[in-house]
Image (cartoon, rainbow, N blue to C red):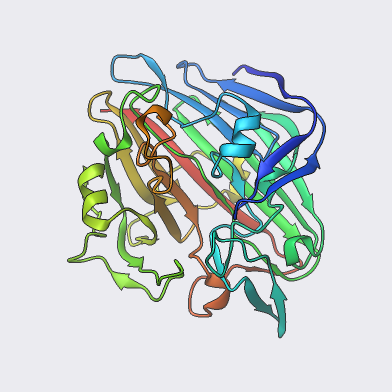
Length: 373
């Protein structure tokens, strides 16, 4: 399966951090973009800036290719205008209330940067999405991709422990886009990693994602308070958050006043089979369940999101521009399915834990499985 590379940007990159501050001097050398293409003509593009997925070209029911990710034309725009578009979010994705958490009796303080709310959002001022990662091409038995690696020093953004993290993006010949993560630490810490791709399956952004249909495999979700911090776990039955059957995105956005909520993935059924590959964990590949399904009825493109994570954050680009001339970077044109642990889990002992202890290995597999209908 062919993999090609090209220089993506040169020189210093200034980016807009969560909260609005412009930051420079973190990435100062060239960045590279790789393109992986399978036998069907599907392809993905990835870059070492933020270990970011910048393209996903998939076929429609007529066999025509089309871009399914909302993207920017340059890395400069990703850095200054992006809202995590396709990036690896860490070391702690989503929100931590007050930016505080406790490990082994010690209280730690991460930056408070949530656009006026008293939370740490997506790991602070210098998160993984705005750093340059090491990269190597990988391939195994019909699965090809790029493995990105980063060492995050002890104390970075207030988080303890030197964390060594890798994320591998790969594409199989059955049109699975796999994202596989592994991480270790030299002291106990917390970790919650996700990809923040904005999906639009119409092909080259022909239509708003409001025209799509989607479902979320969840009997429960996490309502939030005025600061977007989950309050509890609640059944979706009888609420606008009951998304278990396919339904129109636009109608559901209107009923719920937009989505920026985490859903508890229903794992009562057997895991979905993913052929083991050395590229995504080998024989130790984590088992995955269906998190969400999204499709564009007109093109026939369908994307099934499978993950080993306990939750999926659904976000429908609520805070983008409202001006049509900015499309597709406009409100509701894209939809995120962020496979992750629940927001603020580090402060809720009864929820799936996000603490990674020295000597243990964090593993996550998320798959975007493409097909047509």
